[in-house]
Length: 106
Image (cartoon, rainbow, N blue to C red; front, top):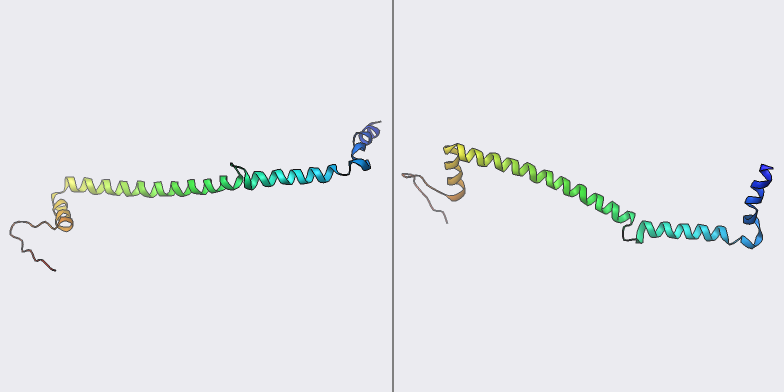
């Protein structure tokens, strides 16, 4: 009895006037899948591009955070060590201490 019901359940697919159904389902499913993958506003490709961009931005943030920490250490060193401050001023701003000989090269 159960087998007869299963045969009857799918018998409408085997009729010759429904031969268009399977190709229609395949084409429709393929079309929707392609649309979702490539053409939709929130497509899989856009999602992958955004994911790559987020990872790139996170790496950039980490690099900048390390640079900020290094600059903070340099600032603390300049605030607390007079010799390093003097060396920094001479090297960066070309300051001279009283009694130093200054040579201008052009």
